Length: 205
Image (cartoon, rainbow, N blue to C red; front, side, top):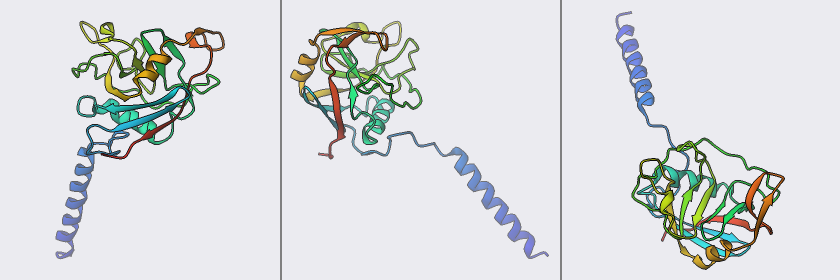
């Protein structure tokens, strides 16, 4: 019995240590292991108006970039529509299919608009509601320098990358004819659907 007792104490201590280690282990966040050592992942958008290549800023907006990449690699942005276009302002997409049915969404993410990146022309930012931390999957391209979307006394909109190829596609998208889409109650919806056919993570350089 005396020989068994120290062994039992050792096993219980080991179990307790393992439990504490697991309790203190930081939970993995969606997308953080996608090209995890690449601070500037690149994503290619194949759209019905041409191709766009985006370079992401993981160093400045890690939560936002990881979240975005998790949707990209699962094909969640494929066959979605650019549902809101305000001429010479923004081009928004990522949330609806061609019939304007909402795509599945995950949890909301923390607002990283104070990262020093500005909503300048040809940057990509997260769309959100009034709550500053309500961004989920929708994004928008800035078609011009939009200083009003940057943080000031209030939260801004998180910039997490920029267009490095295909700025002319953004220009063309931002000038299409729009209308009120009664089926979903959207203003500024393109008269003819502009589709994001496929979003692909490009190989590391």
